[in-house]
Amino acid sequence: MSPPPAAAIVPAAAAGVHLFAPVTSEAHEALLRRNAFFAVVLAAFCIGFSAILVRLSDVGPAAIGFWRLFFALGPTIIWAYAERRTAHGRRVAMGDTRPAPLFTVRQFLLASFAGLFFGADLIAFHIGLAHTTTANALLLGNLAVVFVLVFGWLCLGERPTRGLLMALGLALAGTALIISRSATATVSDAASVFGDALCVAAALCYAGYMLVSRLLRRGGEHAASAMGGGMLSLIASSVGAVFCLSWALATGEIIIPRSMQGLLAVIGLGLIAHATGQGLTTFALGRLPAGLISTVLLLQIVVGTILAAFLFGEIPSLVVAIGGTMVVAGVVVARPPRAPGS
Image (tube, rainbow, N blue to C red):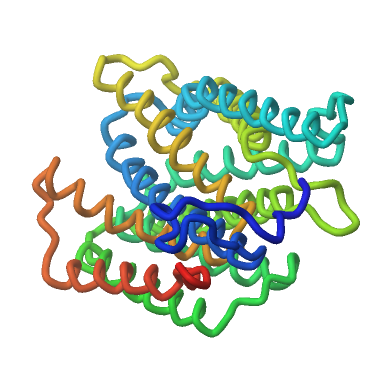
């Protein structure tokens, strides 16, 4: 992709200035980063439906992951096709009529690894959720934020800023408060240890998915150009779906939904949580560090709590409300600065 122009013409209604106003490359990039940030906020709201929809499904843990990824393939194919058409149009406008390759071998292999990480995350979390308390599962599953920050710093060189560390502290403290009310639920020690270990494994797998996706979306000076979000999502979702289905068949899970409610639940997981939620997350990974994105995604805990209150009568306590406020405050602190002149 060519760098943004040094100046662009924007209408007064959009910029709030004169009819023709110069927009610097720095301002343009800042605007793109802010748009990506708000895309992640919307993604957190969509992914927040996941826990509710999983509760309503009636198939096995790996089968839930398969249907989630399968029903997301249609929108993802459309996204990848539109993305390729747009990229081809840009090349033609620049005088290059040669067809661009869909992806390099390196990109395909890395995107496949991302899909395996995501499929493993779904399976481990769904099984772990059945062997420990919901509180423990949510807390340990969201340790992915910590893993992404640490490994993003070590592997991708994305050093977290002081502001992002403050945002992470606020968001994690709020998350701990939200789930603390149910942390005293009784469960056998053996089951708890097994379930907790699986949820930690799920967090590690999701961190791997985020970091590999970020590596592909940002490109690099000596690597291939950044991979499109649509193509990355298509490959990762396809590989993840095959992985989940293979696991479900090998372990003898119930695969076909047994009720209309179960069918609608897995369709919702595919269209809302994955195609929209994870799709927006993949899009944003082209503009924002993985650590910032994973911090903002903690907002899904607040969304899930509110939905549970409305749908299942699980009214949050004052402690949970305070925790939700802290999560939102962490998201606000993590927000990128405004573009100059905006």
